[in-house]
Image 1: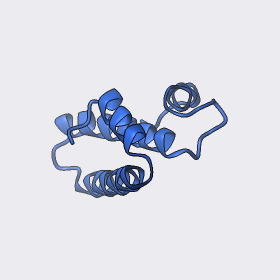
Image 2: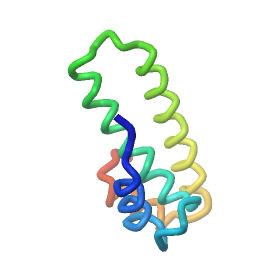
Image 3: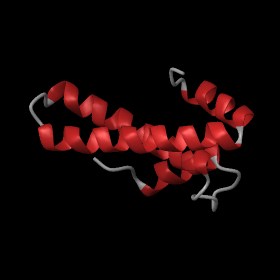
Image 4: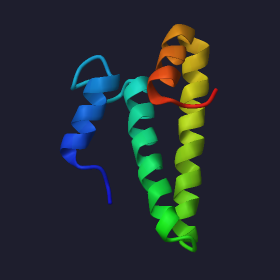
Amino acid sequence: MALTKEDKARIVLEHGKSEKNTGSTEAQVGLLTERISMLTEHFKAHKKDTNSRRGLLKLVGQRRRLLKYMQRKDLNGYRELIEKLNLRK
């Protein structure tokens, strides 16, 4: 249930500056958001999968830390990313 190579490339191209820029904060947040949404769908069918739920919580925390970093460094980019990904903030 992981992201395919094509999906990752598409997300990095959407949010990063180029397709090779996988380390940018925007690209990382985009990839984490996609994985979080996939896991959320997984839990609708598998309510008792607590081990994967722990992984989901770790991903959410990592995304939150990256967004906090981005808010400190580039406030306008942070606001654009929140708007683009439809995240509540």
